[in-house]
Amino acid sequence: MPDPLFDVRTPRLDLPLLFAAQAQKEGYVNEIAARIDALMHGAIEAELAAPPVSPADGLCWLVASGATGDWTGQSGTIAARQAGNWLFFAPCDGMRLLNRATGQEIRYLAGWKNPVRPAAPSGGTVVDSEVRSAFAALCTALVDAGILRT
Image 1 (cartoon, rainbow, N blue to C red):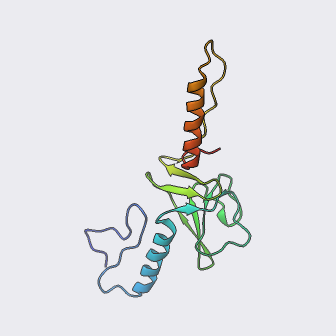
Image 2: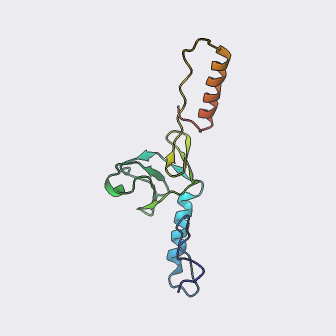
Image 3: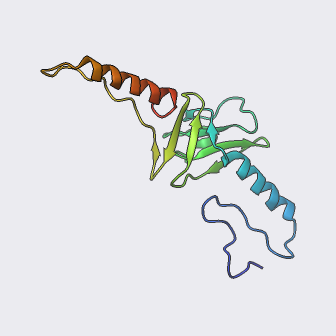
């Protein structure tokens, strides 16, 4: 039944494709809607290794390494709660997520990138207080923008 020009799922977000005369299309459409709902304008509650005790439908988490429970073997994926079940999504390069726990945006490029705040300058033979002040203000602005963590 698949069209020879198409695979049965999309390559980036793994969405199922529909075909002419396909039976039970509502199952495929519902899966597509659940995946888009979880991944579009992505936000996670936090990065955890174990599933939360009472997760609400519609919320997502980034599965940390050493995952346990229902998340065993899913490290690095996005776990979304939909209709009382867990859906897991493999990240792809270019994905961005807002981590609501830290207020920081993280991105995926061959692994999740989580920038950290650089250390404040110290020492040296000449101390330039204006440069140090500007550096501190720049770091604060990047934290406020969600680019760096505190």
